[in-house]
Image (cartoon, rainbow, N blue to C red):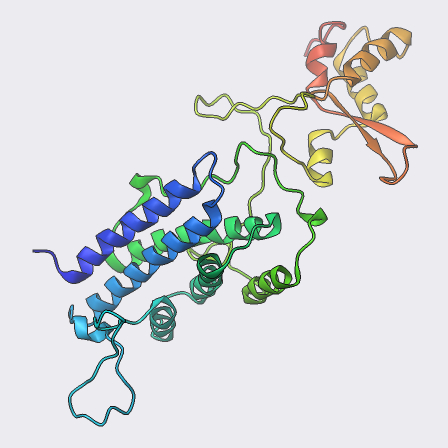
Length: 320
């Protein structure tokens, strides 16, 4: 027969897998709320499993004592059904942190997601700004859960592919343009207040995990295919100004200099300008950027290194 702590551990892992499965649904309007509810259930079961493992599997160690009962025998608080009430996730996380058994950033992460859970259960929050933060904290929540299971019970959950999908097939929300209600603003401010000033990137525990999307060339068979397109119905991925400059690093003069170094028959003439102008209409090779975002002019074109593959068809590469 399994010890109570191991039974709770199995249930905790099952609950976390359910949370991840719900979050990774392709079209599910209640994903953040459902994830927070199930993930906090998973963490509460995990914390109770650890607590029992540290207290000889005595179930009484989890019961909430009634203060000043006046009786020599312990008296426990009861639920509506008359069952003995057990300590919750916040109490157990705090106690384990005080004993040096749980990372402080993991505790902050739990406090934030408890607030998300409570808000979801008692009312609702439907705002892209909140969804973004739930994703960041959800990624950390799963990471911390896997680390705690490994540290406390020497169980490796990597085989279960415990990760959240950071991208959906819907366009990414334009968070800066979203208007928050007063309650939503207070909610977001509370979450931000919990965020630590600094985090150790090498630590297995975190308060939140930032998601950054980059396009890189890869020949790996498991690489996710991405194609740049002007199709208005295609899923969107928004790039920051820094990422755009990284993708299109060359201006006209830099591209021309590289052509001069690369080709033996290259000349700066009308033929070159004509070829280049045609390629500028393809976002794979060029990006037109306003020098002042609020004014249509002036503009400047930047080029991706991939444009050289097309120019190779028109010019002869130098022998090396």
